[in-house]
Structure formats: C-alpha cells, structure tokens
Length: 145
Image 1 (cartoon, helix red, strand yellow):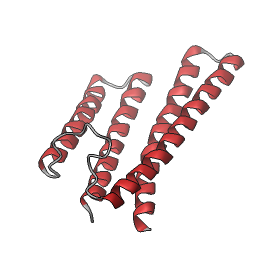
Image 2 (cartoon, rainbow, N blue to C red):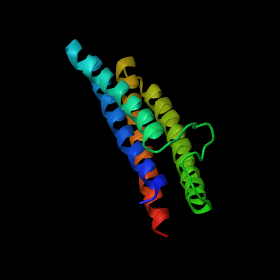
Image 3 (tube, helix red, strand yellow):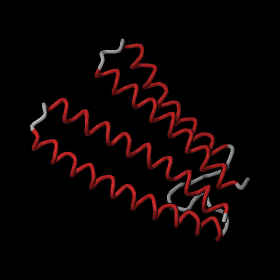
C-alpha cells in the first residue's frame, strides 16, 4: 500500500472519530447529557486531531501541509488526488446548495426555530459524513484503475 493511500485511510478514520465526537456533542446539548459525556466527547475530538497531526508528522514524515497535494509522491497519485478533490468539491457544493434549498423550504413551512436548526444541523452532519465516505471511496476506486 502506498504512503498516500495509508495517509488517506488514516485521515478517513480520524475524520470518522471526529464526526462521532461532534455528534455526541450535539446530541449531548440536545438531550442534556451529563457534563462528563460532553467532556469525554470534547477530549475525543481534540485527541483525534492531535493524534492525526502527530502521526502525519512522525510516522509519515509530513512536515508542512500548505499545498493541497502534500501527501502525494508521484504524478499518478497527484492525478488521482486531483480527480478525487474535483468530485468531492462538486459534491460538497451540491450539498451546500441543497442545504440552502432545504433551509428555505423549511423556513417557509414555519417550523419552530429549534426544529429548523436541528434539521439543518443533521443534514449538514450527513453531508460531512457523506463527503468523508465519498473521498475514501473515490480514492480507492481511482487507485484500482
């Protein structure tokens, strides 16, 4: 397995951990979870990003992540990354437009403010989770070709 594929797999799983922690935080605020549950979720969120940064730096020797293609080593991986980024950007743009359309439709139906915001938050959460899965799947699919 190439270095880029290992980095993509690791960031995929760390993003999943972060999404679970964010979900627990939101549900904790909604259903009045004890403060320890919220604290554990916050620690999980911070720890997952710290582990991701440390592992990228120590295990994969990524020193700076300023360019968009910092994890690619050759032209083939760079081409795959450009295809995947293009598809994910299109998907996220469509997701944002869908979120705006859904928000305006729900606003016209005159839901309560809390119901409207929770619905939009749930859809935004699903868009973020879908983008994470789409990124991993497309990388795997284009890497097979």
